[in-house]
Image 1: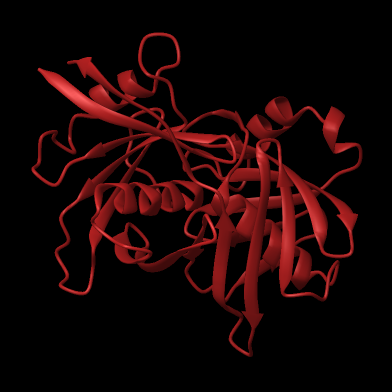
Image 2: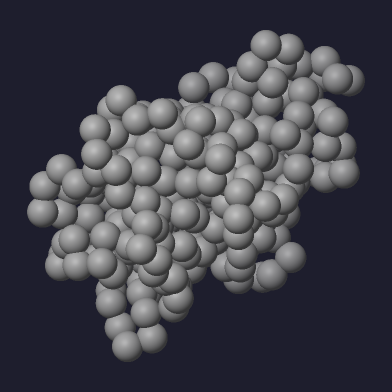
Length: 261
């Protein structure tokens, strides 16, 4: 069978996307998704997404996300932004979207070529001597380091991702360096990919909130440099925690193709 797919990237975080509104592939076909994400034997991507018909009349579509290992995963921020851009390409939306992902409902808007994706509220940030931990739709370990450009992200990230207290479930791991008052740089080791990725949207969101929570910045508009480009996070600090969180950045179609499966 010939499968039509699209390749998208958001600051280097790349995805295979399939228009699955007619249920052309089964969500249980994890071996297929793993194969498609394989960079040597498939298309190559950090993850795969299905755009499906909405079940809620308020929604424009449903987002289903799989890691590169073929397993359905928690929320992917850059993936969500790319799927919004894909929905606009298909004509499913104009410039505004409401959709449901594994972590609940999201709102998004495309403005001046950038996708503004509303993330879930964050009410709990765990602070430790060496790091912070929070869930921004996916679990994230956030640690400050020096000389980030030369840091061994893959080795150190793997150790933390598989070690206590995360073990088998694992956590994404972010290593951060402050650049300016409200500007930071991050490199991320992603579970499911089991390697460093050029960018991680939920990780960038976790970094921005962590830097504000630890008073490394007082601004509620934070720039974060990833290996694949620059993202912005805007939010509001309230008595409950952090609300109206928006992940902002580019999302681009790389190519369209067909593959036999």
